[in-house]
Length: 125
Image (cartoon, rainbow, N blue to C red):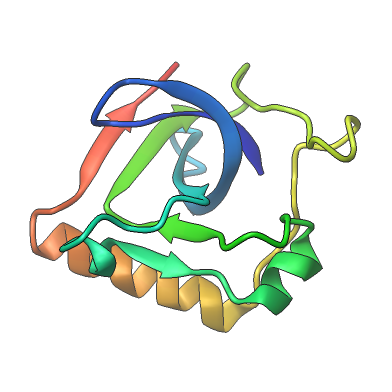
């Protein structure tokens, strides 16, 4: 989905693709990870997952390299004013679903970051 993501480090907000990784029906809270074109910093390569080209194409991301950052999350209550329309389709905010195997890879790396206490979580309005 496209979302006004706020980076933990500099509190800079930008509409960008994000992946929903966790939802709570009880609280209505949604947890997302950002998708970025930025190559991981040296020493932080384990904090990102390169999205395969075929997945990028299938969900409508551009053909540049796209990375899921698994070292930080935004949490918010659904629905949110931060949902943003897709650049190529102003009637939608969703990019679609990634294959289950790729989603599980994201979840596995997120869990590893949490266990290693390397996760930055930010609750946003």
